[in-house]
Amino acid sequence: ARNINAGCSPQQAQAKSNIRCSSVVREVERLKEQREQRRARQAEVRLQKTALRRQDPGNPNWEVSVMLRKYRESISFSPLRSLDPNGAAVQQITVCVRKRPMSRRELKMKNVDIITVPTHDSLIVHEFRHKVDLTKFLEHHRFRFDYTFDEQCSNALVYDHTARPLIRTMFEGGNATCFAYGQTGSGKTHTMGGEFCGKVQDCRGGIYAMAARDVFEEVSRPEYRQMGAKITCSFFEIYGSKVFDLLHPEKPLLRVLEDGRQQVVVVGLTEMPVTKVEDVLRLIELGNRERTSGQTSANAKSSRSHAVFQMALHLPDSWGPFGKCSFVDLAGNERGADTQSADRQTRIEGAEINKSLLALKECIRALSRQCHHLPFRGSKLTQVLRDSFIGGKKNRTCMIAMISPALTCVENTLNTLRYADRVKELVACKDDDG
Ligand code: ADP
Ligand code: MG
Image (tube, rainbow, N blue to C red; front, side):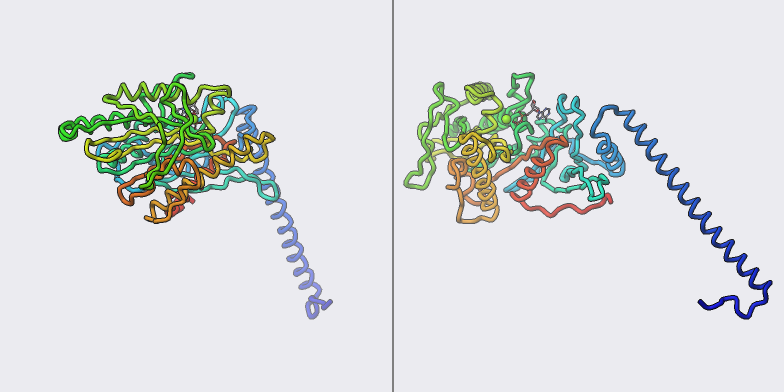
């Protein structure tokens, strides 16, 4: 090595060495200081974590809760709150999402609400994940729909933005169809049929009843009265590929046929004439009772069938109904477990449900594109609802995707949202919250 002190006097060399020495010492001290600061910070974080854990003892999900709280504090909220007296803009296809509140059981189990609904048309799913080095983080999945309803939205508010704008379709000679889609326990029946009070359902507050109210309001207008317009109701269930009449005391198995005019007919389906809302409520109660009766538990059974409630407008000189409204409480879309089930019947049923939900998605997409080829024969559900998908601009459809807020349901929730997203592809919203 070259002597760097070459050409210096001994005093100069000593001075240089002192300078070097002191700079090394300074560097060592700086590093030491940094280390101490780092340790102090870590200790503080540890202390904070302990304090947080103490605040929420026994909560295995406390870290997600903390991350979520911080995230939510950092964004602004303007969720949907008001009823829209003029009715929402009528689109041919509307796709909405409704988040239900956490259940008492979920709260007790310290489950975490991982869904944020910041605005009337956007929603974020916070997925809890681990990096390779095991540090924890939240992945934010952002979605956009026509409307997003948070846990505080009532059935009436949901109705106003979803099914209500569709009612007049029936009076314009078209078919309106409203679907409740989602995993079992996400709130499909609550939304369609009304709030549960224990095991009893108050069907006056469901979409079926609210729609009936609006249908009678319209049909009681003088022009329809003079014409002699009549309303009928049907309520049936599709279980596997079988169709059962829910308004018939023996709940008979019905056949679905296509007639010479390519009209799909459910042979022998009860079409009950109704003249007031109370008539409809009685039929809904009767149908609900039929739907949930049987050997297996009520929920297990109803979660594996599609329930279709229809109101039809008949004018004296028109062949068949002039227009129709259909409300469909779909079978639960959680089917992963079925594919591994040991029970052959369960596997077959699960496959049939999957098939029908896929066919449904394709039919709605075909409707939006005014396609002439409709894959409606893909399942009994789409076959029975064929009229909803043909007829071009006259027909309108609305899908309400129901989701659970719970951390433990994240996989099903993401599946539901991705399905709804595919039914109507809207541009994802811009990230504006970092
Ligand atoms: P699904 O029909 O999708 O299986 P349900 O409608 O039966 O689900 O709802 C499951 C449970 O959650 C029920 O006890 C219901 O009362 C409750 N629930 C669903 N949605 C809501 C809501 N928006 N507000 C309050 N409770 C709800
Ligand atoms: Mg249900």
